[in-house]
Image (cartoon, rainbow, N blue to C red):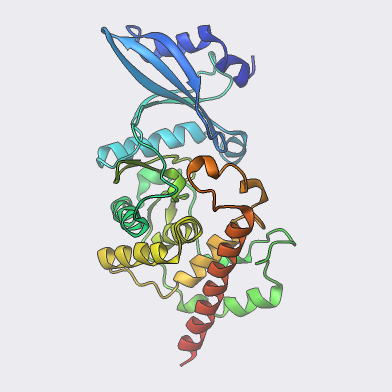
Length: 320
């Protein structure tokens, strides 16, 4: 039985619930929206006369291709976050037996909250995101996180090829020119990185940020790698003012040197799609009727142009 078939089978879902807690009973289930990186099903349970909900989460094919142990690794990261009392989904069970489902899966605690693509005050929301990132980056990369990929050096990331039609595909001469900066780029001590820290992975209750979700892209490395990813998406969805508020708050709280941030910004811009055609629909339902592929592509272009300008200034200062 394939994973989609199994997830539509109440008997399989009931067996998963029994494995989680023999005293619990499945009373309903519903598939959750999203599903880009993972498939998620809300399981409504009755336990000791009380009703509650948990989340069944299966890694998507892209994540499994990159890491066959994606579920186990995400579970380990969530356990670490729980020990540090960080706001993230609580891991309840990891099942790698593959006798109920053909892939490993997680069961997570339910989190109240919503994603806010159009918060009332975007700069306040951006500062709240920065505060949470500061807490996450307080976890130093140690042996217990050795299974995670590493962000590496921004110049190595920039040297990796992207699609020829990507607007920020760098030619060999440009890469060689950037390579001269390598001795000048001092990386910060590696920390835990979320890997995809953007407004779509934040849950809010009213105006309070209550959780960062979707940790399947977690890695370790220079914290500026995470900062740049957040800056790009905040700029796209909430505007440059919110991006600047986020950056100021993070730097004030950490005191980290951001001289090399333009390099990481360009890495973030290059990892984004060549255009946002696949992202262009459905924003009206999320409260953003103003959002479309053209607007997103233009915002990314401005962000990347600013990164290139910053790199040029970085090189000029380095020569002085």
